[in-house]
Amino acid sequence: MRLSELATAVRSKNAGPCVLTIDLLFPDTESYERVAAREDDLRGYLREQYGVADGDLRMFSFAPARAIKLTMPRETVSGSFGDRDVYGAQQHRPLLDFEL
Image (cartoon, rainbow, N blue to C red; front, side, top):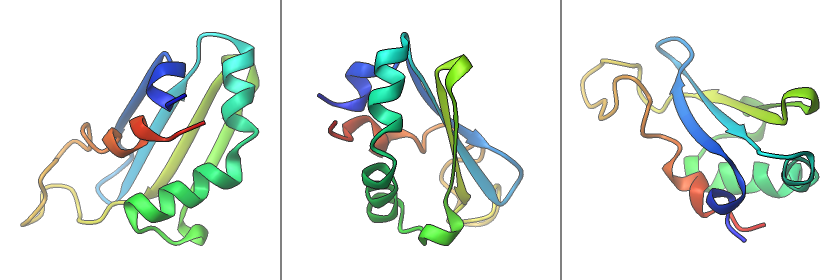
């Protein structure tokens, strides 16, 4: 099953000009726990897809909200030359295909 089939929302946005944050929201505890239990696999997938070092990747799980927040450095500074997504709102796309 893909993450896009399990999560209620997968969204990305800037957390400042140099940091990207991705939110994963789940409809129920079972879905949340299924993804939270795969933290190591999710980290590996993010390293591969986004080219981010493990030390630069932060993952916060919050069970009461059934949510996971991921933060990592942006590839380019928001609004700088070569930035294709000023708001960071399209950066979540590779995560939709993460297989659980």
